[in-house]
Length: 480
Ligand SMILES: [Zn+2]
Picture (cartoon, rainbow, N blue to C red):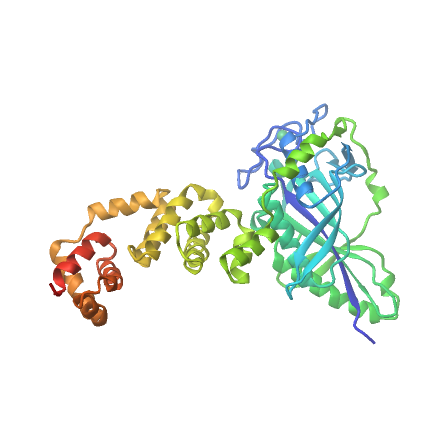
């Protein structure tokens, strides 16, 4: 008998990158003291009226355009009722019948490098719930998150493996970031993924669908799907009827690496959906859709291919750069300064990315530094700045929030080598590179490059290339 086949679909929640909440003017915060960003609207006080955040709608439409969704002429909102402490109104405002988009399409790359398609069923806007915190003796609620705008994407169950599910989720994340719809930082709770998993046997028998809630990392997504496939494959083989238990919702236990039953799934009718009476339907201007489609930036898959073809980058480098628009732009700007692709990639993907990560930063947070950092890479490349010094300047630029070139200039002024130091560095460089020295002595000035680099290294980058060059020419005996 052939192995059972996994059937996987995803529900992805993305926090929309807006300053304020979906239906009120409260700021969207991260890490602010609890209950400091709420008002009567997002606390659900009687009589408070929601007003739709136009920026959230526009960002949603931008994502719809990037994912090829069909956007209806009229979109509208609905109430989804359920009683839960984190839902102050007793219902959530979401979209049921007329969402932002239907029938979208995602192209993502599979493990063997093929391009696969994933049908996207719908895209809608909704508000987030409050955050609850449970301890043995009490439960606390933080309403800062209540009313924060979310975009939900529901995919068709076209995925067949944990790996493809992760790759598809990553592709959606990259696109959402590229179009500015969401920061989609999982570690900040800006993206949550909920896979629907079931297993189909060779004889056509299927297990009930399980939904795993609230996964906040790609590792959890991969682990939860893998676990469910194994668990349900066993259910399929079990003849006692456990496969007829019905749809269930499960949670992911990170430590034990297994899913745990949470509840039997409510039927939609129990949510008592009905049109939101306080929000009129919104007519979507076709001209706006056209403009948003025309303004779409280069999407990651296209960019990845271009980085590979135009710059000859290896696939992994191209993929990392393509996922980070800011980094890709910085890389290309550095290439434009004449830095070879390998060196530019080494600087941005190695040194800069590591330094940013150590400080928990994104290049987007420091995009003003990109030009200066690119120039440092160019100096390293032409041999006028030792790499260790460039790294040190990079660290200082990030820590002190200063322009790296200004730091470099300051460093040069404050700390030029004395003539004695320079002379010692020149002697040492000549000793270290006897062949180059002999070539220069023989009249070949082109051989000076490595010697200049060596002098700069030996002065810790404090000598400038011209001074080093002159000192070498003065010191090395030459014909004529
Ligand atoms: Zn509010």
